[in-house]
Image (cartoon, rainbow, N blue to C red; front, side, top):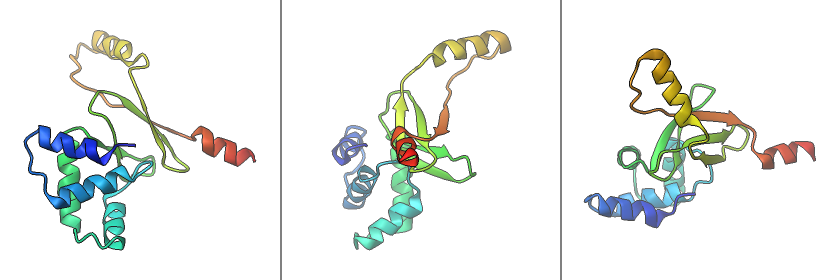
Length: 144
Protein backbone atom coordinates (compact mmCIF):
# COMPACT_ATOMS: atom_id res chain seq x y z
CA UNK A 1 0.00 0.00 0.00
CA UNK A 2 1.26 3.47 -0.88
CA UNK A 3 1.16 6.07 1.91
CA UNK A 4 -0.63 9.37 1.25
CA UNK A 5 2.37 11.24 2.68
CA UNK A 6 4.63 9.55 0.10
CA UNK A 7 2.39 10.71 -2.74
CA UNK A 8 2.15 14.25 -1.39
CA UNK A 9 5.91 14.45 -0.80
CA UNK A 10 6.57 13.28 -4.38
CA UNK A 11 4.32 16.07 -5.67
CA UNK A 12 6.18 18.61 -3.57
CA UNK A 13 9.61 17.25 -4.57
CA UNK A 14 8.63 17.46 -8.25
CA UNK A 15 7.55 21.10 -7.83
CA UNK A 16 3.78 20.59 -8.14
CA UNK A 17 1.32 22.61 -6.09
CA UNK A 18 0.01 20.77 -3.05
CA UNK A 19 -3.68 21.50 -3.55
CA UNK A 20 -6.34 20.09 -1.28
CA UNK A 21 -7.95 18.05 -4.11
CA UNK A 22 -4.56 16.41 -4.87
CA UNK A 23 -4.12 15.63 -1.18
CA UNK A 24 -7.58 14.08 -1.10
CA UNK A 25 -6.86 11.91 -4.14
CA UNK A 26 -3.58 10.86 -2.51
CA UNK A 27 -5.56 9.74 0.55
CA UNK A 28 -8.04 7.84 -1.62
CA UNK A 29 -5.18 6.04 -3.39
CA UNK A 30 -3.45 5.26 -0.09
CA UNK A 31 -6.65 3.66 1.22
CA UNK A 32 -6.67 1.10 -1.62
CA UNK A 33 -5.43 -2.42 -0.84
CA UNK A 34 -5.31 -3.68 -4.40
CA UNK A 35 -6.08 -2.41 -7.85
CA UNK A 36 -8.70 0.29 -8.24
CA UNK A 37 -10.44 2.21 -10.97
CA UNK A 38 -10.89 5.93 -11.30
CA UNK A 39 -14.64 5.35 -10.98
CA UNK A 40 -14.08 3.62 -7.62
CA UNK A 41 -12.08 6.62 -6.38
CA UNK A 42 -14.83 8.98 -7.55
CA UNK A 43 -17.48 6.89 -5.77
CA UNK A 44 -15.44 6.83 -2.57
CA UNK A 45 -14.90 10.59 -2.77
CA UNK A 46 -18.65 11.13 -3.17
CA UNK A 47 -19.44 8.78 -0.29
CA UNK A 48 -17.02 10.74 1.91
CA UNK A 49 -18.46 14.01 0.60
CA UNK A 50 -14.92 15.06 -0.27
CA UNK A 51 -16.07 17.66 -2.79
CA UNK A 52 -13.87 16.52 -5.67
CA UNK A 53 -15.20 15.51 -9.04
CA UNK A 54 -14.42 13.00 -11.73
CA UNK A 55 -12.16 15.32 -13.74
CA UNK A 56 -10.07 16.11 -10.66
CA UNK A 57 -9.58 12.42 -9.92
CA UNK A 58 -8.54 11.68 -13.51
CA UNK A 59 -6.11 14.62 -13.62
CA UNK A 60 -4.57 13.62 -10.30
CA UNK A 61 -4.23 9.98 -11.45
CA UNK A 62 -2.50 11.16 -14.61
CA UNK A 63 -0.13 13.27 -12.54
CA UNK A 64 0.65 10.44 -10.13
CA UNK A 65 1.21 8.12 -13.10
CA UNK A 66 3.63 10.65 -14.62
CA UNK A 67 5.55 10.56 -11.33
CA UNK A 68 5.43 6.72 -11.43
CA UNK A 69 3.55 6.54 -8.14
CA UNK A 70 0.60 4.75 -9.69
CA UNK A 71 0.58 2.56 -12.75
CA UNK A 72 -2.26 1.73 -15.06
CA UNK A 73 -2.69 -2.02 -15.47
CA UNK A 74 -4.67 -3.80 -18.15
CA UNK A 75 -6.80 -6.48 -16.53
CA UNK A 76 -7.41 -9.86 -18.18
CA UNK A 77 -11.08 -9.00 -18.82
CA UNK A 78 -10.10 -5.98 -20.93
CA UNK A 79 -10.80 -3.37 -18.26
CA UNK A 80 -8.03 -1.30 -16.80
CA UNK A 81 -7.24 -0.24 -13.27
CA UNK A 82 -4.54 1.49 -11.31
CA UNK A 83 -2.18 0.30 -8.60
CA UNK A 84 -0.17 2.41 -6.22
CA UNK A 85 3.53 1.66 -6.38
CA UNK A 86 7.04 2.84 -5.73
CA UNK A 87 8.84 4.73 -8.50
CA UNK A 88 11.59 2.07 -8.79
CA UNK A 89 11.24 -0.35 -11.72
CA UNK A 90 9.22 -3.44 -10.81
CA UNK A 91 6.47 -5.74 -12.04
CA UNK A 92 3.08 -6.61 -10.59
CA UNK A 93 1.37 -9.85 -9.63
CA UNK A 94 -2.35 -9.14 -9.28
CA UNK A 95 -4.97 -11.40 -7.72
CA UNK A 96 -7.91 -11.96 -10.07
CA UNK A 97 -10.12 -12.79 -7.09
CA UNK A 98 -9.60 -9.94 -4.60
CA UNK A 99 -7.53 -7.45 -6.62
CA UNK A 100 -4.58 -7.47 -4.21
CA UNK A 101 -1.26 -6.69 -5.88
CA UNK A 102 2.31 -7.52 -5.04
CA UNK A 103 5.31 -5.69 -6.44
CA UNK A 104 8.04 -7.97 -7.76
CA UNK A 105 11.58 -6.74 -8.34
CA UNK A 106 13.71 -7.94 -11.27
CA UNK A 107 13.21 -11.75 -10.83
CA UNK A 108 15.39 -12.49 -13.85
CA UNK A 109 13.70 -10.17 -16.34
CA UNK A 110 16.87 -8.25 -17.10
CA UNK A 111 18.37 -11.39 -18.57
CA UNK A 112 15.20 -12.08 -20.57
CA UNK A 113 15.29 -8.51 -21.96
CA UNK A 114 18.96 -8.92 -22.91
CA UNK A 115 18.12 -12.16 -24.72
CA UNK A 116 15.18 -10.56 -26.54
CA UNK A 117 17.49 -7.73 -27.60
CA UNK A 118 20.13 -10.18 -28.78
CA UNK A 119 17.67 -12.27 -30.80
CA UNK A 120 15.66 -9.40 -32.27
CA UNK A 121 18.28 -6.74 -32.77
CA UNK A 122 16.09 -4.26 -30.90
CA UNK A 123 17.47 -2.02 -28.22
CA UNK A 124 14.74 -2.44 -25.62
CA UNK A 125 14.19 0.82 -23.78
CA UNK A 126 11.61 -0.28 -21.27
CA UNK A 127 9.31 -3.14 -20.43
CA UNK A 128 6.37 -3.86 -18.18
CA UNK A 129 5.02 -7.19 -17.05
CA UNK A 130 1.75 -7.82 -15.29
CA UNK A 131 1.06 -11.30 -13.99
CA UNK A 132 -2.40 -12.41 -12.88
CA UNK A 133 -3.36 -15.28 -10.60
CA UNK A 134 -4.79 -16.09 -7.20
CA UNK A 135 -3.07 -14.74 -4.09
CA UNK A 136 -2.19 -17.00 -1.13
CA UNK A 137 -5.05 -15.61 1.00
CA UNK A 138 -7.67 -16.33 -1.69
CA UNK A 139 -6.17 -19.78 -2.34
CA UNK A 140 -6.43 -20.56 1.38
CA UNK A 141 -9.98 -19.23 1.55
CA UNK A 142 -11.02 -21.41 -1.41
CA UNK A 143 -9.68 -24.52 0.34
CA UNK A 144 -11.47 -23.81 3.63
